[in-house]
Length: 444
Image (cartoon, rainbow, N blue to C red; front, side):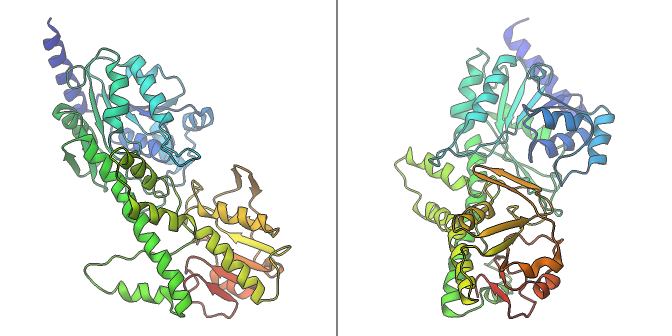
């Protein structure tokens, strides 16, 4: 059999396997993106193997115990006991599967440069087990060009050629932790392959778990799409954060301004001020794009400025807390402060890049006595910050000089907090409908 005939047979084989769901899928990285995706494929009939270096994660999946709020343990256990989903730390499982989806982290270095270590490590492991007919898809958020410039050379070093022997595509993740309205199935999927066969196969695969799949011409388009989506949010959040500061000086209620603007049925969508931005994507993506832009001698001034504005919000919040304490005759040094909520947004268990962590650090640096409560974050182990969540005793709120709402979890009884606390600083506007003289709000 000729190489061409072998390649044609392998292509037909992977197409047929995807169509009839007999293709085995490997998910590299079982975090906030990888585990929901693995479960989605398992629930629609595919056999899925999750691969992660974290033994604790792998053991929990084996027991059907979820470590993500968005995934109920009974749902996960059903997929595991039904034989559709399993997890391992053994990279050799990559040879057995037909499609490999990379869902690993893409952090920044200390100098805010892209850190592609996890992607490179994943590509190197895949290269060890790459075979004819393999479909490889990168989902990790990254700068345009990563799939072609970083992943492709590693895989091609095996002697196999993309489009002939194996297939490679990029499809940006669109997971929104805590969002009950949009799931993997109801959120459109964007796919861009290195060549048409790769795009076609990736599109076929995702069509089983997503109601709509949009094919684009190249992986660079798909990569830029993801970065643009997050930069769009970063820029608009920075805009409203700056507006909030201006409104404070002009004695205008920014929350009322936003509510009024939201009545316009066209040309506007609301964004809200807060203590900063968090999560894996929005705080990082502007720097991924800026780094790539520098290769073309292009300075993304507008985008970088927005990131800088958002990054300075924790310092601004602490300044406002200091002012609030001073107004009530209390120095920050020695003041007893309770922070409510440290997750980067409400009703999730995720502290990645949360601005609350920086606020805590700054308050501690000012010698305040700081406690925090978060129903989803029992402890913090980030850099030099080591804290445990305290029990929320509403009757004891009066013992604190200031209660700071950084994350407006739905579990908080805001009316009781307003009644019991001496002083509240609300960074989220969640108490806007509670008239009380002891509440100070961002943007008012």
